[in-house]
Image (cartoon, rainbow over the protein chains, first blue to last red):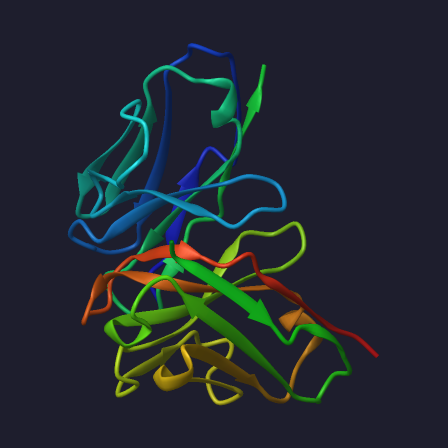
Length: 107
Length: 121
């Protein structure tokens, strides 16, 4: 199975900060990667698909980039609603695999 | 709007079976592949299984292969996960989720709110 290594595992930041989260795949997955936001006790929400495409309704401060093995999720200016856990998911082949998650906390 | 409602969770002893259901509404279930994803308490997400829009293709995580079976009844707008030979490590919230594209298998898009399965003696 493809291993997805996500970093950092946790991150403290302030409102207005620019934040970057990284996912690295153990093999080439083209651009078959999605990013999800999850708040406590809630289901995840798709933010980015195909590595860089913004899901409908998601604010433009979220962006994704990368292809092959290295991917990033960037939040350009953190808002109070953005403090959550973020997950990457490769859908290149089966079994799909998630990164271990990044918890974004308020500094 | 898209709604996915899971049911069937509960407490079950190791080695026993449980069947989860996911009722879909607000979209044409027969056009979409559907996934199951789980999350153990305090842990990350683990993809469990997917079934194609017509039920002809099914894929599983290695951790559940041979024990879990995904199925669907498009006429009832319902997705199922039959879980046999349950282990304590299967304890998790189980989410059903819709694929993003029609007639294919791709990213996981809409999610239900989940149902908790606890495997304990």
